[in-house]
Image 1 (tube, rainbow over the protein chains, first blue to last red):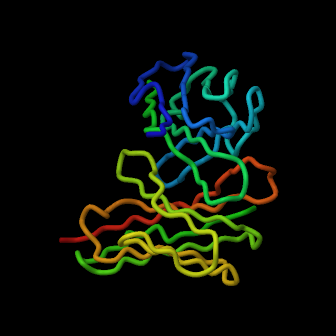
Image 2 (tube, rainbow over the protein chains, first blue to last red):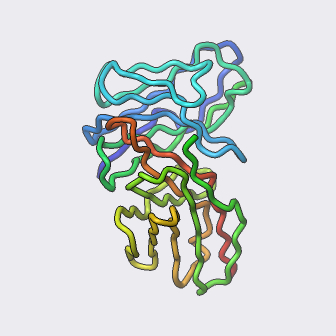
Length: 114
Length: 114
C-alpha cells in the first residue's frame, strides 16, 4: 500500500525551539507539499517542491523553511517556533500533469508550541 | 486569485437520505477536480476524482461536473452516520507547470443523523 509517512503524530515544543517535521513518501512522486490546517481557515499551503532541491513558497511561508535533499523526503523547518504556529501540519505528495491524480496525504502532525 | 467555494454547513441529513455537496470554482480552464473526506482529527482522504463533464459513480458516491457553469458536486446516496465528516472540494491549478498543486475549498461539514 502506497504511503506518505509523517514522523510524528503529536509534538510539543517550546517557544524559540527549532522544529523539524519530516515527511517520507514511497510512491516516487515528484511533487511534495506542506500545509497547515486551522479551524475556520482551511488548508493553507506553506511550501511545495516539484523536484529534488527545488522549492517554492506557498501562501504562508513566513517563519518556515523546507529541505528536499532526496526525492522521497520533504522536511518542514520552523526556524524559531512560536505559539501561533500551533496547528495541524499535513504533508502530501502527487505526480505532475493534469490527470486525475490528486494528493496523497500523510496522517498529519499536531504541533503544540508552549 | 483562483478560488474554490463551498458552503461550510453543517449540512444535516437523515440516515438513508441523499446528501448533496456543492462546489464552485473561479478558474474557467481548470480540468481536474477532486473530493476529499476528512474525519475529525484525521487527514483528508481522496474519495472521488472527475475530469470530464457529466457524472462519475463509485458505489454510493457520484461526482458531477459542469465545466460551463464551473460547478462540481458530490452526491452520497443512502447516507450513513459513518459518512459524517468534512468534505473538501479541490481543483488542480492550471498554468503552474507540472506542480500538480491543488486549490482547496474550506470544506462542508456533513452530519448524518440516525
